[in-house]
Amino acid sequence: MTAGLASVLAGARILPVLTVPSVANAGPLADALTAGGARCAEVTLRSPDAEHVMKTMAAHGGLAVGAGTVLTPDQAERAVAAGARFVVSPGYDAGVVARCRELGVPVVPGVATATELMCALRAGLDTVKLFPAEPLGGTGMLKALAAPFPQARFLPTGGIGPAHLSGYLSHPAVLAVGGSWMATTGHLERGDYDGIRRLTAEALERSRG
Ligand code: 3PG
View: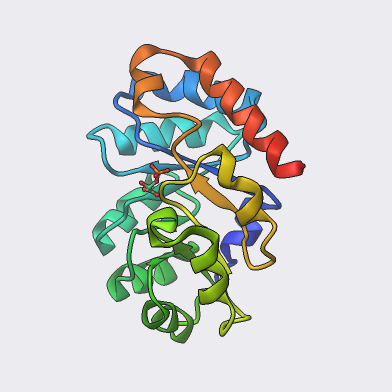
């Protein structure tokens, strides 16, 4: 039986979502995130170097690294081969879910409606990514969607920033909150690792408050 995302996150409630332009960013980025207190990160498959980045960040040792923007079963397989310990998708794809099952890795599909959530639950999953959380209606949407499904846990992501954190994290169905604000492509292109460390530390601080 595949352990769920909760066991990989091991209590971490903030998931930095990273789109990393170059593998050269991977080491300093992992250092900055861990210095800020992060214990997990999602590397999206939106940049050509994503697999190398994942490998490098997974080898760093301080972070549970997962893959994001996984759209096909083959991408899931390559991501796991590159060291991904969990797989996140913007939507629900039965093939991605099935391949992750075979690979024994937790998979977190995106849902934006009750129907999609029911697909995920029927497939035996217990955690979904509420995406894109803010445009969907933020915590109001989360509360309304979570109410009929007490067995579901959520990873709200999409448009979230520091000001929204406490609202999401105080909902009992929220496992963790994901977002790119702590380490944007702009930070990485500028080499602003100190900014990444600072924003990560602030987010972690807020998540504890
Ligand atoms: C994702 O891939 O999960 C989202 O693009 C992250 O959303 P954000 O950039 O709005 O935080």
